[in-house]
Length: 114
Image (cartoon, rainbow, N blue to C red; front, side, top):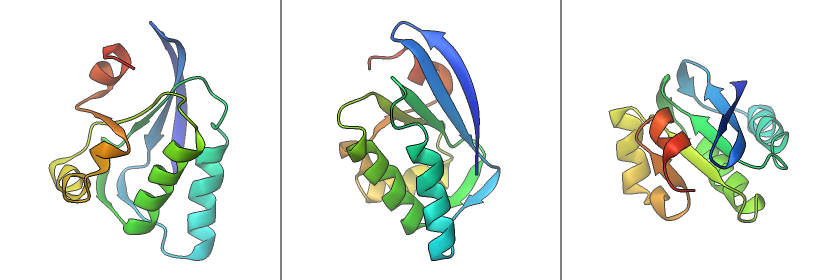
């Protein structure tokens, strides 16, 4: 579901997780577990950006995993960026900006305040 890239910015090394193109959904319990496993592999990375630029739709189970991942990181920097309009609308309705640091694009996420 995600490919990984590492870059350096003012806070040090940042792991960028690029979500696969299309719908980011976890249609079964196994798929939800797979999303959690992929995210948890980056639990101890100093800073993480989740790039959703290729995501057309996201379901509630994945949103739940993103929110829970942010909480499990216990204050370690996490940003979500590059939301397409429909996904941004869902994030807005759910007020996820209260739980997740959302940036308009990857460069803003890298260079903005952490």
